Length: 94
View 1 (cartoon, rainbow, N blue to C red):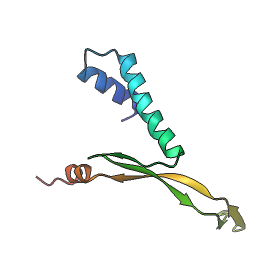
View 2 (view 1 turned 180 degrees about the horizontal axis):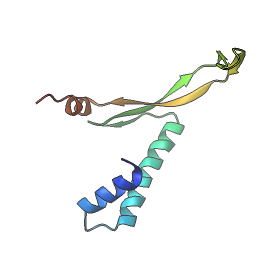
View 3 (view 1 turned 90 degrees about the vertical axis):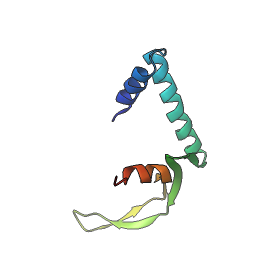
């Protein structure tokens, strides 16, 4: 599901809201999550999961084509860990 499909589905479930308002709400939520991660905060949505940022230190990599050594700089990457409720619903065997 892409963001536009999510907006459309939420708008269908809430006919009292305009689609442009739903799109604005979804964008605001995602922007706030991004801003919190950029500040180094952790974002936890109970039952869904938690977003955090992990540090990948600088290292020496290898170019797969030539085999030559390449310096890879330090970077921060987003990390998502699913919540207990989501894991249980995904693995429900009933």
